[in-house]
Image (cartoon, rainbow, N blue to C red; front, side):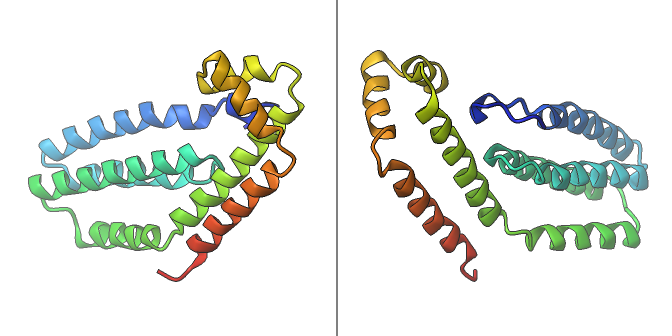
Length: 178
């Protein structure tokens, strides 16, 4: 990933590609399950799940939402595969291990940290932006008066420390035992 100076403009190409690949694997899994090829359907199901796990390594809040959506898709595929056939105990056991691993992933903590970093980088960029009103209007879809008010808030001397304080509190909450 190449980070843009304005973090909001960073292009997440690896994230964009996950949708098409997940869709193709879903089609393959559905066909395999429908044809009674449970083992091949399980391979597609596990491949979908592995895509989800790889997405979570992209440090942007949206990546964790995509991760959750793709995990849910793989679980729907698992249900469909089981409903239409009998996957081997080994493949089901292997998939169960992956699910247990995923359940222990600190998703809320990862999202909180990614959110904190993204917002801090975005507002730090805005503070240095010479054409902040135009950027605010484009990035946040604001009207003129809303952009001016937002600019005043962002340029407030304590704004970034306030932002970090609140995000650090969120990260601390995410670190609490569940």
